[in-house]
Amino acid sequence: MLHAKLATLKSIFRPSSPTDDVNLFRGRTRQIESLLTGIAEIGQHPVIYGERGVGKTSLSYIARTLYMSMHAGEALSVRVQCSDSESFSEVWTHFFRSFRSEVEALDKEQREHMKDVVERVETLLMFPDNDELAVHDVVEALSLIASRKNLLVILDEFDRLGGYRETIPFADLVKSVSDDLVPMTLIIVGVADNIDGLIQGHQSIARNIRQVAMPRMSDPELAEILTGGFAAYSEKTGESLSCDARTAASVARISQGFPYYTHLLGGAAGAEAIRDGETVVSQATVFRAMVRAVEDTSHAIRSSYTEAVSARADAQLVPTLLACALAETDDIGYFSSTDVANKLSEIVKAPRQLGHVNSHLKRFAGDPIWILEERRRGERSIRYRFRDPLMKPFVLIKGLESGMMPESYA
Image (cartoon, rainbow, N blue to C red; front, side, top):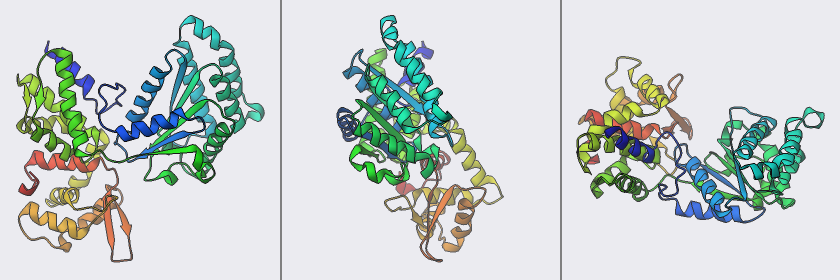
């Protein structure tokens, strides 16, 4: 019985996998509306971009679910996860394999209806003329599919392809399918601060791209993930589980805009409450669950943190990194050494000057640690931010777990 309850909870709070259930997806109303508007218009192709961990892939899954429901039985959706340094040709080789799998999942009548298209698309994408896949080959293949099925193609983790040379053919592809009025939509998803950082050469296709920026989630949106998740659990199991507004706000604040951590803490705290027979998840429950949450955090995050704070005998490394996580930042996440020194003074309850933090900041930003990145404005003006934005809430959780968090943060 307990195992079944925990399994239900895990199906709701999913930090390690994207959400594809519309009923469990919270917030992002503006982004969903923008995405669906782009999908509905022929010649428009959405590009979803933002920091790692803000829910871009989940948004694309929700778009896929809504698209398939709007075209019940008449649509095909193909998702391709891009890999490091893949070429244009390799991406479309992966597309064909996924496309074939989607067709094979159809009923017998529909499979027969698509049989000749699959064969022709295979010839175009897998055995191109001159052994070099050209943009017009892909356009022809997509046109063939779209002539039989409403087509949605999602290219996820697009940023992993690399720079200018790798993305230019995709810009040409977007322009071609738009100019030819091919009845299909291409959604590009990737990590980037802006559209320029994701797809190069886009100036010529500005009218064909619908930019869908994914900022960090607001605290109310994150709190809704928690309260809505517990409500969904109660509905599925018939057993009451909830949390008060203060607890939801506390988890949202720790999460720093990232749904990953809200799901992580929500799942861990909910499991703690279920095991203890509690029906209300309190702040005390969340604190008890933090050890479990830390253990369940991405291995890469945990390893980077451990290497950063324990590579040498220095008791100030841990509080200094916590001070970095608490420091005031600008709009794109950068903070100054002065901000860090001020927060460190608050943490250790003793005055700390720049000399106490500069060597640590250089260590965190240098090889082989690379936990921070620098932005220089002249030789004396250096600002820092976390290279992986998901590291910051992890540092805060470690600070709360250890009791090192200053009273002003509670």
